[in-house]
Image (cartoon, rainbow, N blue to C red):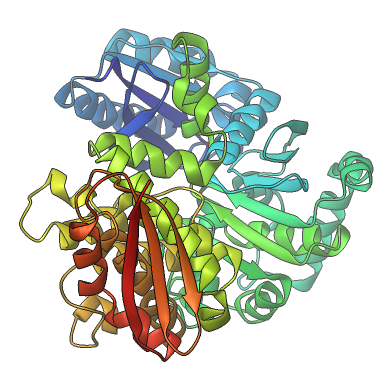
Length: 514
């Protein structure tokens, strides 16, 4: 049972984002609901007094969020306010109105705290390595920059260069004029001069964009590249060449044409341009060639900070520090997985992967995907024994696994789906929709998983070890704890796809007891 249900609200300049999660006693959390309300505060300019209409829009948005929290039986609301409210002379009045009318307190936080929360969210939600990355979260009033790797936040700073502020101060013509772009760029150069020294020290080679502006840019570029707008944006990566190609076309558009661009939230049409100019400046100034997207931002950072401050143990975070591994094990725990069987099948599968490398020639990333698919292949039993393999596919595709690209999630889901019964076929609608490259990987990986699953047909981890002997025919020798007949039968029953992969028959499975 969950330890506590909490809501985290990020009160930004352009939008209020709320997420509701169940925080568990072992340090993990599961999403329950979310709500985003566009408010566009600072109609008089960011840093100036909020107008009556600003205050009304803000209160109306928070009233909807509070209603959702009540409906979802939220026990605690944590609300952090950013630029528009903390800089407004009447921001305190707004905070008091929320207390009086809605019964919870907003806490305005400084920019460096925003950056810290964003950094923790990105560390939690993306697959990072030891090489530093530069995180950029473009808000309405301010933009936060964080230099981090998978283990540490090296540097955090917030600058008053949000898109609403920059649009209000610089953008007067439609489409944006060349001299306006030059003025914005000059301002960015001045504001980010202090960042250059840290870039020289840490040398990040990838820009990670979080929050709405960067997600909108990623979505538009995905469509520009011919990809579906329904892809999972988390971990979505594109090159600086992709960005510059899109920028060159989009920056010339007037408002009417911009609003027709697939992937752009129409409520951002009036202030997306300074965000694009900022991305262009950062890529060129710091010579960065790759951009990744994080769908986790400050609101998730609020949750993580709450967990670190309030939940003892943090067993899941300690046991699985890597984002991908932790995300998979959070899902496994949620669906009450058959731990011993799944781990045993996974260990057999990765050894078969290594033994048969000559035939499939897939890299270590595919080995990792196979291992995770093997761990998750039976989670569909949580829904029903009947067609559990199809339920496993559905769960994997719809569980927002963190640290994986959309392609990787689809591959793991289909490999798990094809561990039993029918093999991959184009008449299967979801499989047919995949790329040929994905299909090829799925065929090879699911072949290995099927054979591995057959070698634990009893679900009692009877096979202690095994060897493959590769000559004219493929032979598998297993060592078992007790009678091997069920494992031999299971392996021989599921050998067909491996035989096609290696181009030779599996002669048989021989066994001896330990």
